[in-house]
Image (tube, rainbow, N blue to C red; front, side, top):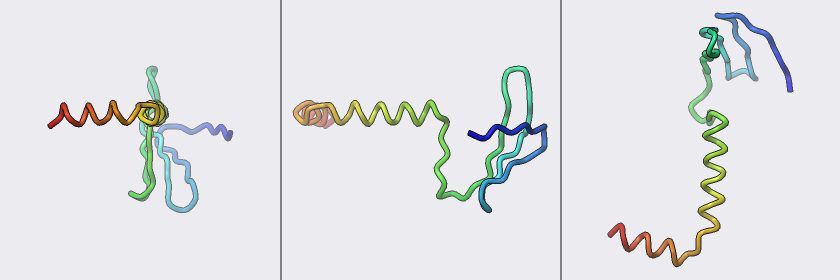
Length: 74
């Protein structure tokens, strides 16, 4: 892990096409602007973790339960 110190208005470049800019620093957190190509997926870690848990839960559901849910939706 690389740890860098930046001030408001300063940036960090990743490769040639991603730039992170510190927009604001306050007592409750830091605001970061991310400039990246559209094809780069950017997710907050908690959303990425939730998606992983949802996928795992969906894989554990028997197909018969999914069929019943589809019937209810019709």
